[in-house]
Length: 355
Ligand code: ADP
Ligand code: GN1
Ligand code: MG
Image 1 (tube, rainbow, N blue to C red):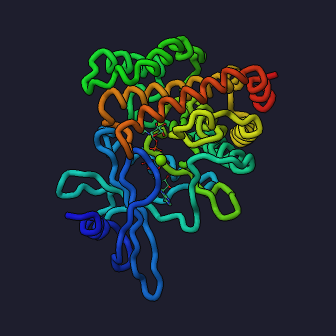
Image 2 (spheres, rainbow, N blue to C red):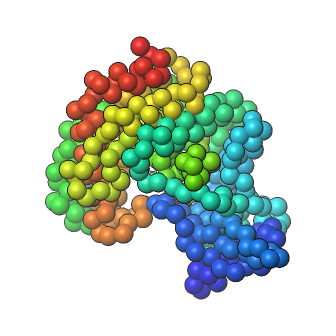
């Protein structure tokens, strides 16, 4: 079955008022298969997002979908904007197709776009502010805790253990081509333990800038990609904004000369997140914002490198060396963060009121 046929059959199982016209792949995510479906309703065409949830990554889809329902309803109850799930005809939050694959549907947020990176401080501020607000809004999510959808997700020490194992096994015979990067990572392994232990709080856990939908006036309209919203730490959320919204290039830029951190973007992200999150952070959390950026950037480099060594089983790739290139770019960015540490640390402490 081709994509359109599959999508037609899947869409028919959701409470969509309209006649299926077609469906196109959409977005630049590395994990799920995302499509926009078009449906004729009277004289107009309406759109929905259909997502096939990556079952290699997410083992417990019902738990994940319950998290998403709870989180989106809580945000709306607080007056915020959140993704809106379209239920299946039987009232379920997802359906399973004949091949055993799980699908969900969201309202399509019209007239928005995403950025894989940005050179605009205003946009960086907006994205960080939106994720800060997200964190504030979910800081009083009632019990029980959200379910863990991926174990050890932002456990940098665990990510190093995975890298060590993949480099040792070298199942694809790629370790030699990545020897320099493997060495770079292990030289910095101590960074994995640079953050203090803090009580768990609800985190988005995947705050890269392309998980924010912007309107045509560059306002952040809605946060997407809620699969990893679960107990975590603010460090990962702020850290991934540093990784993706303060860099001068995309995360897979091949020309490493172009990869740097821009101080004005870093300032915008710090101010935006700190204002968005408001007063909910502990002193320990406010004091380590800068370090969150280095830890998350290193951790992501380690994850890309591990996946390269494993034969690209996790992140979607466009070419065989893609994950290695992504790892190199993360490490180049980490070097820049390290080089500018004193200036950036001062900016972060100022913004978070940790002076
Ligand atoms: P992945 O886990 O693969 O990154 P995402 O949930 O982030 O999947 O979706 C991929 C992309 O699809 C997003 O980056 C965004 O561009 C787009 N997208 C997702 N949901 C919506 C929506 N409801 N409305 C408009 N665009 C969306
Ligand atoms: C994945 O799903 P997406 O493309 O927004 C990944 C993140 C990584 C990111 C790197 C569930 O994010 O953790 O930071 O790629 N998501 C998952 O670009 O592993
Ligand atoms: Mg995404």
